[in-house]
Image 1 (cartoon, rainbow, N blue to C red):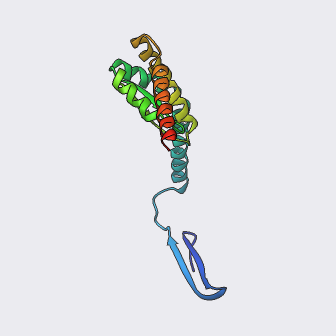
Image 2: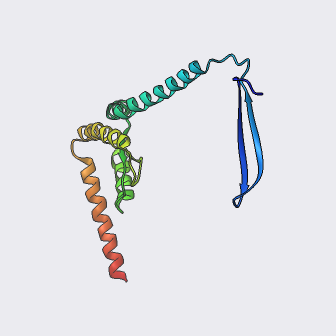
Image 3: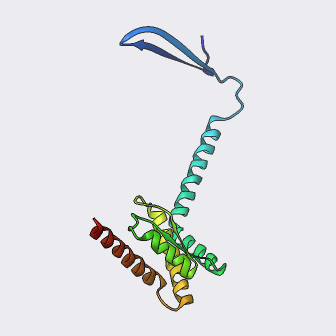
Length: 163
């Protein structure tokens, strides 16, 4: 006869609706030194800590983006974080920014972007782009985008006329 410190679970095994075996699973807890309530409280506490950490990470994304951009600018590294479906001239745009101004374009996401990443990247780009434009005296991003787009359109028109 099992005592209160024993748990026994029966599992019936069936195949195509016909019973063919019963498995007895028993767990003996007698002499266990861990209090179940303390263990449950610990698990709940750890889960609450993870939830709080995620909420803090999510809501601090804009601040973290601005701080990281300031740090990169302080080190002399100018970076733009890109996300979303790229236009066909983005490779040329990135090349122009890198060759003319030493600015790196990093793709951080394509079509599926979380709100946290979106706010981080937008905050980062706001600081980084302003610093780059201030350093070079004009809107280098607009300039390179226009050049890249016009070159892409010329190449596309040339390909279409060759066919």
